[in-house]
Image (cartoon, rainbow, N blue to C red):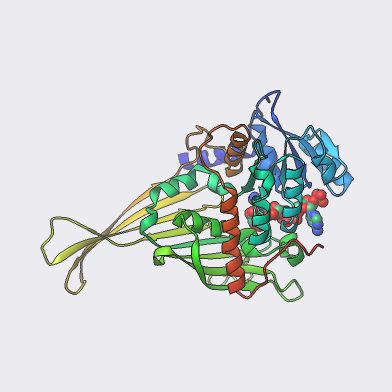
Length: 413
Ligand SMILES: NC(=O)C1=CN([C@@H]2O[C@H](COP(=O)(O)OP(=O)(O)OC[C@H]3O[C@@H](n4cnc5c(N)ncnc54)[C@H](OP(=O)(O)O)[C@@H]3O)[C@@H](O)[C@H]2O)C=CC1
Ligand SMILES: O=C1OC[C@@H](O)[C@H](O)[C@H]1O
């Protein structure tokens, strides 16, 4: 009962936070595009940040921009994206354009001296990522801040998970995520190849990030990859679901299953067309450990640790981390089980050191973005440019393994 009340209160406060007064010198953000995601990813989080003002918007269609500005109380409307970048009163921009436009507009924003909060995936492929994140403008003194908005990494629950695993001992990790069918429309930009769409790039990039974080390493190879394409009549280079396995150093294996149009999986009488509702799940298995103990000399005690995180991609809404230690006492000679038992702990962390349990991962991310601009220490959680480049490399090798072409920003709609 208490957990339900807390769930409702947290999510209500996350959606309708109390606005705080702003500093006179607050960072003034401009939005490129009147996008659907900006309210969750930036406009609402900014309400509780005293050092952030959403100051301007530009959209391809002036009327759309004006209506959006009115709805979200954004004072300045620019006639186009470049005009917003040229506005000296804007310090930072948020870019949530289709993936094929990220490289172009992030580069233009850096050239205009703006800090850039750039939606994931950062760009369309690894070569583009190297071009963007190794832009010489980023290594100059007082260079602008550029961040790929891999928001879940900033949530305390994710950091808690990382503290509960033993990176060196992991043998296997499996990361799943299913967006129910109907959530992502086939006519949407994420289903357009020339806009760098696709499930692995749009949704699976989060799963890829979980593996890279869990192993704290890059893969040696993509050993297996396949996909379900969108139905005929749509771009056949577009994966609606992606399944891949990578081999990491020390032989550990990481796999993902990401589906942006998931249906079925229910038993009769529900049909296979019913959208699948499933929590994102990350399972991390550690190697067996032999525990010293007071046992007869012909027996041994083995402990196997498995950590499972539920709802890792939207941990602010709800999450649970299960830390399970399976104990087996067995005979040394033939491995026969003498006795077995399990210990399980359920862990959560909504607030971290912030003291606020209703911040979304986007709000935690904004905190770090601002700290970086202000050259304050922050929590230390960050996505470095080289990290974003490695992220794209892991995606590229999987697309290639699955026989799909790499996406790019050169083909425009
Ligand atoms: N962090 C998160 O939770 C989420 C992140 N995203 C990311 O945000 C980005 C945009 O997502 P998406 O779902 O594609 O958003 P949209 O399809 O809504 O597109 C976003 C904006 O891009 C501009 N745009 C749309 N179509 C085109 C086009 N054909 N050519 C040029 N510009 C266009 C529009 O701006 P205008 O208003 O100027 O017309 C539109 O508002 C992606 O990188 C995606 O991965 C998406 C969803 C959730
Ligand atoms: O970032 C995202 O999160 C939610 C997904 O459904 C969406 O496709 C993706 O872009």
